[in-house]
Image (cartoon, rainbow, N blue to C red; front, top):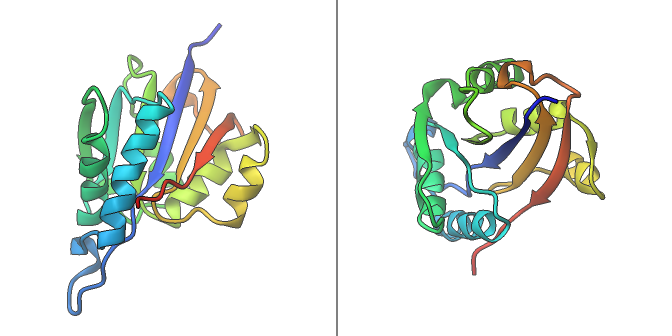
Length: 171
């Protein structure tokens, strides 16, 4: 039987919009900083610790991962990938498909609309009402957990089960 794999999709936390700043360079807003930390606590408490993190190179995505990672008990390897910024479904599937076979759990940190498109395309089914909630909205700092059996290169639309969906918020 093929190995069970887990893809955790994390949309970056709420960003600031400083006047005159390029989209790529936008930092997290104060709320985003709190929510990113809450995302890390949620990952830790739910025992979703990745073996590898692939993160967009945009400032708000990098900051989201760095703040979330501070709350994990172990620090997974992180790779910052230009192709995740402003990526569509096809590009994200390509990035995920290159994941080494030794990785059981991958965390992908990126942006909408691509992250939502990836989640909705991959999920053939869901536990509970997670898929309906994901279709309604995949807001900033949302986390979706998808599982399936097989190699990363075999992950394709309609092949995964959406097992968890959360929108951690900081206080």
